[in-house]
Image (cartoon, rainbow, N blue to C red; front, top):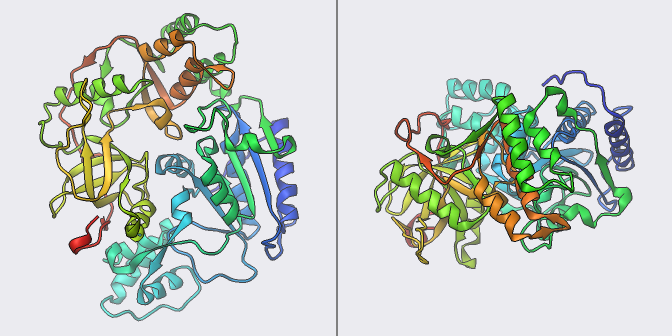
Length: 511
């Protein structure tokens, strides 16, 4: 990727210089494109923080490009060759597949934290192909693969730099070349973590253990992880370890969504005053819409954002009724949210398999249909590089005014899912969609409740996170009504993967 020439603002330039100093001390001299061997005993953590539009992603991208030009290898998470003593590496991480895909869509080779914590174990025969593709081995002679298949793998790798994708192009399935997954047992080198406001303390400690040099990018105005009392992991760092970006660079594009987001910093602004601002923006710019109804069509691919669970459940029920979904089954195209894994501790390997391939808590998924075995589902994991999987599933449909959810089907163990047509604003952090619907009556309820988080009215934090999930258009929904869908649910708009991956072992211990 060739990044356009940019001129840094003063705060960006200072942050770039400070990060460059940290990297130079760690043996990576960006000015002279010189590398020294990594010193695993030397540790450094720094954070670049700023609100939406302040240029964090631009800075991350420029640093990644400079490191690559200096000869630092990018670790993607799909395959790693034998470690060289003098090799320097960079991994660019995000907490969720959707957050990683936002970076990848901007040309930055990001992967998820889980794909770095857990590494694939390749079949030795097929690993020879990976080494050849990566330029560290000769063209192999592999039984069952002719020259045409290897040529397809080579051509794919030259375009996409993905070993699993190249092997799939050769006609192999994931179960052919990946024997399993293991927890990383040796440190890496330099780690960049985007959306670090989502990290909890355990994840932060894991990352510090793996990366001697760790750089966090985060937004201090977002919502802190649950049970962390409004504190984010970068708040723990000393003041000289936190680099603050203040200028709003994307304002040059005249974004009404960012105008609204930054207006929330005004301490005197009330909810009623903010809603009047939304109405004014909607009259001036069609990128802001004041909606009288929730649009069911949009809910199929981007959830309505709400504060209260009761609202979420009520909207999901209305969505399913609008599409005439049966009470005892899912329709292909229904959105789901992974709610975790129901697996006993002895099934650690299965848990690693599921998490490494994207089925982590909060992952957004689209149901494609039943699997070949009872209790299995074919799924599209939104934002994953290899999105189509088959997994043992436990699907829970929550119903209004009922404590126990309805379960249309379930395996005995596996990945658990809630419906995803509506999600809480907390769960939406790290994600972006072209168009986002925000359910304003819930934010009004939060304002009436008078709650604060880290000294800021909760409704303002909720509103900030919710509206900055919108990339191009914000729908501010003011009434508790649902518009009927204009067409049936569909799945043909989803990216198909050439080699769907099966995510569960066979036999008595199926996940």
